[in-house]
Image 1 (cartoon, one colour):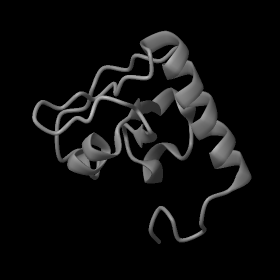
Image 2: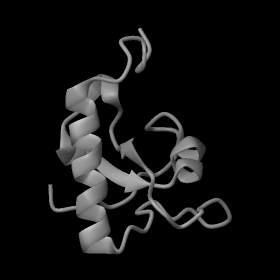
Image 3: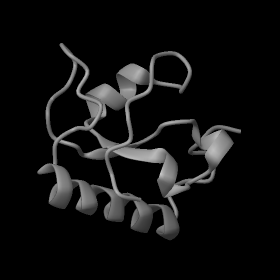
Length: 88
C-alpha cells in the first residue's frame, strides 16, 4: 500500500499545517532540507525523515521542505537525512 492510497485526511492536513506554521515562525519559512542545486528555498510541504511506513504521521519525524528537495530525497534511506530543526 502506498503512502497516498487512503488519500489526505483531516488529521494529516492539521499536522502538515502545524509543521509549516512552526517552520514559518522559527525558520522564516525556509526549506530545512536545503539540498544544493535543488532547493527552491521556501518550504511548502512536509518530509517524513524516517518514512511514513515506519513512523506514520508522527510530527517528531517530519520537517518542512520545499517540494523539489522532498521529491529529490524520495524514500528515506536513499540519501542522508537532514538534522531536525523544528521544535516538535
